[in-house]
Amino acid sequence: MNVEIGKIIGAVGIKGHLKMAISLSNRQNISKMNSVFFEEEKNLVKLNFIREHKGNVIISLKHIKSRNEAESLIGKKLFIKRESLPTLKEGEYYVSDLIGFDVINNIGNKIGIVKDIKNFGAGNLFEINQKNNKTFFLPFNQDNIKKIDQPKRKIIANPIKGIVND
Image 1 (tube, rainbow, N blue to C red):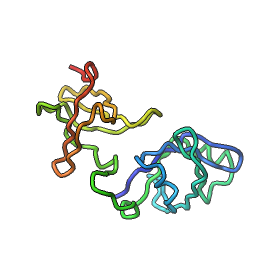
Image 2: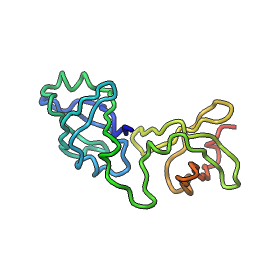
Image 3: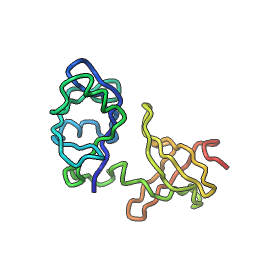
Image 4: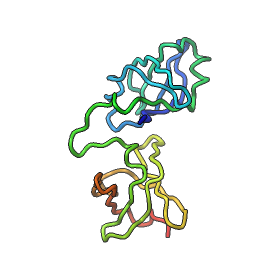
C-alpha cells in the first residue's frame, strides 16, 4: 500500500526546490525519508529535506534542477511505500488510514463517514460525508475528536454546535 505524504504547492528559488504541504502528523518524519514517488509514476525519486517553512517544508528532488521543472510539479502528490514508514507507537496512526472510518457522536448516533482529510494551512480537517450526501469539515482537534477506535474503524466526535449539516 502507498501512503500520501504531501502535495507540491509551489516552487522556491531558481535551483528547483519545492514547497510541499505535509500530510503527516509529525513533520519531522519527512527528514527521515529518502525516496518518494508521484502517484502516476512508480519510479522512486531521491528526496532531500531542506527546511521547514511556515507550516510546510522545502524539499528538493534529485532530478529537478530548475524553477521551471519545479513549477511543472505544482499540484502533484508525493507518496512513499507503506513499509518504509516508521513504526507507530500506541495511540498514533497515519491520517490516511482514517479515511472510511465511521464518525459517531457522543450518544452513539452516526454522523457520517470520513471521506477525506484536508489541510488548508490551519490544521487537519476531516471531510465528513453524511447519509444525505452533504459534506462538512470537522477540525481534527481535542475539542471535536474525543476518541479514535482503530480496530472498530470508528471516530467518536463531539462537533462544535453548528458545524454538522442537518
